[in-house]
Length: 128
Length: 375
Image (cartoon, rainbow over the protein chains, first blue to last red):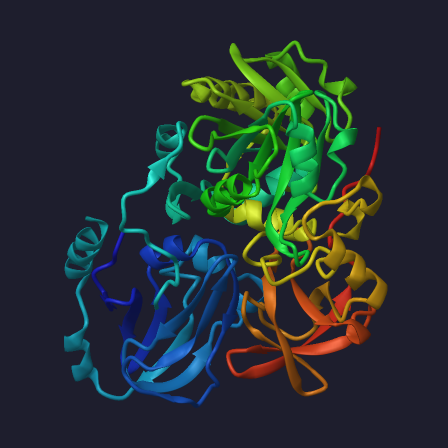
């Protein structure tokens, strides 16, 4: 379920590294908690995000949730497809439901994040 | 990401259908002391199933209070603004428990079980408060009051296919029942009271039973409903369905600070029936005219207006959103709010603050959704 080439946060975001670029989304666990997503509020392209800064909001039918940036960097792309098809966040949270691309400022920050196996353990702890 | 769901950590009451929900993989939440399913397969999917086919709800958390005795009718008449004298054992009505100020202790359904026994079906959140309220007004009335909240299980089968699904499971002639009609009989082998009522804006039935095995009814309906794509439905879709139909939710849209007239429910006040709690206040308010009224709105800008978001008219904060949600059927953001009476006309624009930004909204006709009335 949770892919090894992703890094995970305790707030249930993920970031996948491609060179100096990071692709950011929310985890399958998160989308299940949220339920049907109907609207995503994005940051502006060019915005400088700090680690754990709110980058936007996800609205599901029942809940409103902040998304926090898993890593510092500059927003270079947003997933505009989510404007018309927010359900992608539920259907494919680790793929087509990505939220933004960042130009990563400092890769050392990745040390603060969890690997797939650490995240899975973290989730087991939550479900107890 | 932080999900703002309420996670109950306290011990919760379970309905007799709790294990059915777990078997079906429902997401369970704490709801006023009850562990209830919020969704089974997804709120939007469940919502649309009720609009297009049928959905089955466990609403056993609802409270039941029985009033019996020689003066049962007189007492119900005193507690509620609607005319309970028009009830017979095959008819129910929507009404309220009102304060002397004409505001809501609760909204409810009144059933006439027989000429000296009445059943009040009240909100789960209010059942203890309502029971205390009813007892405290008993005074000289020759009646007995019983709190039956934990005794009854209640199922609701709602949607255009509800009748076709339920009919094979009972000898009650469902087609002959009117809206708000009530019948007594066996459903899937269990003794029940069936009424043609609901909280979704669709045709459908609510089924009350004192049986220890309401799961037999639940399972039989899901089995019979397979051919009609019936889905189990949680409280999440129950809320979006009732909002589209502009049915009030106590604690959101009405409470002890809002009068029956302000809630735009004047049709349930029968001034001519005689005295009842709140009559004088409501009559006075009717004569003087209300200063605010609940309205339905639709967002013009982006975003979903949620409960308690600030409401602005001409740049001034006038109130807060009562109910607000994404409407799965209309695919827009809708809600209810109280506005000053001079701003309640259809088409009036105003603003709602969503996370620091003022976003435009407009007063629209409500109910937002009305089913096609056909025979």
